[in-house]
Image 1 (tube, one colour):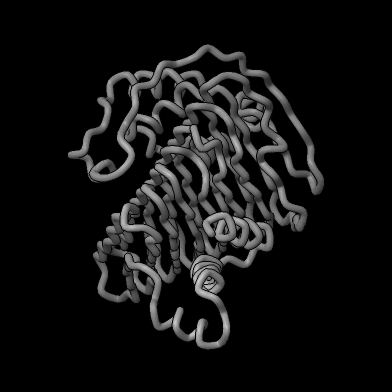
Image 2: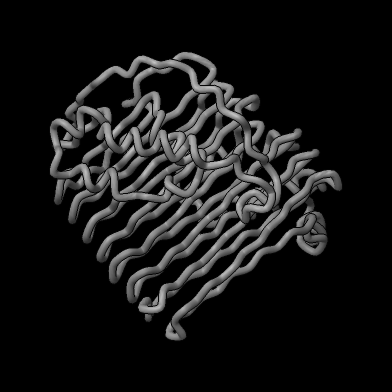
Length: 365
């Protein structure tokens, strides 16, 4: 564990700040210098219902050394400066271990397990390990008030396991947020990932989905609503390494005022990943002429035996839809509200997130 920290600290020091020449930094939010703040890491260990374990990373290494390879196998941080920052200098950590065959219907709310952290800066590292044939619901509800947040969260979903993730990013409108979310789906694992983004003054989110074994499936539905001078970048990756795996990613956004959204999506299909089914979609509605969106989907397929699609759209209200609704008695504001709700709610099934979207649309009026 200590060797990993030292290696990450060294890599962080060696990696330069990224520039616009780097693919992920071409548009939108630009890198920031980081002044590290001292912190006091407190160990903890909790037993939840159904034998689920929650503890800090150091305690996990002591109690479950044979499982540490699940936490340490993600090497993405060796290429990204802020990911190396989290790996080497995290101020608080959490590992959630869901034992094999456990069927848990009660959501695990990560923020209820994390210890309080004071100060203007937060650097946190989280791992959720779902062992074979287990099933779990995870709520990741961000409402942090820190000025800077650097965050990495990994989901390792093992053979025939299921994990439903509910993610709401609603940090303070004065916060700068850099976040990496990495999901690994092993053989016949199924992950559903529903998300809403509405917070932060500036945010950059790297959701990466790795389908590493046959029969795995990942379904992602999301929405973002931005206003004022908010900037939000999303750099998504669907990486297919194995045969007969499925990934669907659909993230739609509404951008108002002087806000700026960037979506860069990559679907990568390895040479041996025959039978892959993958699709990626990003659609946007601009509410004002001053709002901006860059949407850049891309596909890299090294195997011909696949079904793939990707697309993006940026526009204003569909005038035919508005005319249809207004012809049936709805005033124009009500018609626009209904169109926005329908646009953002598509694919979102979790009641908590649906109510969030309805309130965000109401606030835009």
